[in-house]
Amino acid sequence: MQANIQLDDTDARIISALSRDGRRSYAEVGAEVGLSTAAVHERVRKLVERGVIERFSIAVAPERVGLQFVAFVAIRNDGGIHCRDVAPRLKAMPQVVELHSVAGEYDFLAKVRTTHARALEDILYEIKSIAGVARTTSTVVLNTEFEDRPLDLSWIGCDKPAA
Image (cartoon, rainbow, N blue to C red; front, top):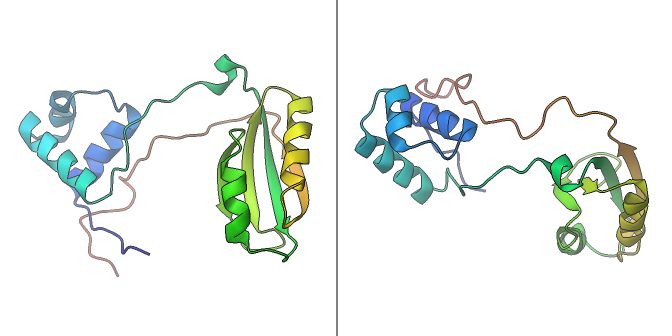
């Protein structure tokens, strides 16, 4: 596991600004954080090189493209094969939009987006057919208060040394 990279307050503010809107120009970000366009460009380049910024992407409103049905599916491994062998099969399913290895009664927690309940049923059958999956437990989302929140690093205190 890679060690945490220390960010200064300016880098944290640049990341927070770009997290809110990745299409903002470096000039706009620079005006917000008190740097020149060139200085923001250089800092972003270094953040990308260091792996702090992994990618630039768009956010799609899932319900606008018909993916309004969301469920969290807890998945338990039966021990027949290692969890590392189950994860790639789950990753190959486009309906599984997040997958987390977790501690506790279950081995994975998957966020699944589908068009309706019947489509969830289909994906659950597919998940249960994976060698190594013992059982699943699903929780259907009734309403989402927020998700995919922009990253705000202001609470971390990036300039302060670690205790």
